[in-house]
Image 1 (tube, helix red, strand yellow):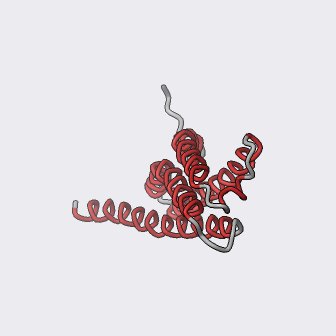
Image 2 (spheres, one colour):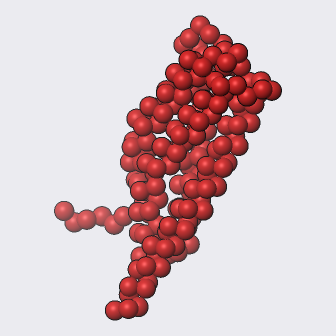
Image 3 (cartoon, rainbow, N blue to C red):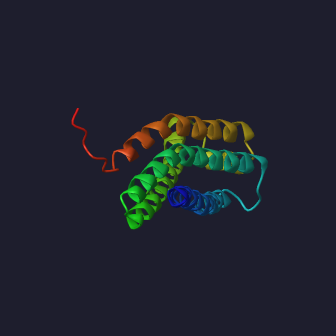
Length: 166
């Protein structure tokens, strides 16, 4: 009985540690990529750039929060199948996939928004247009909240659960 409890606790602890370490790496890498991109807007960080930076980080966190349930499900499924390698590989893959998705979404939002509006978004934010930064930041957050569950559902389809007879 004690051995089973210890093994169960070990699985949960390993899952938490992986989520913690990979979550920190994910957020730091996203922050660096977004920061580097926003630094091209101007050499001086203004309020608009700061607002957009914080909103972009929040939106990337929303995507990560949504997909974390699937990451945990995949880890536990493979761990219980005695395939620790697959458990870790799927965990890494989901983090990588979430990061690539978010970076693509972040850059695509600038392309689409610039085409739909009259303003040169990069120039307006460089000139400290806080209202535009707030609107773009809200767009990032709302679309992340909208797309996150669908992305999670799609990601779950890659876990090879056994077919049930009913």
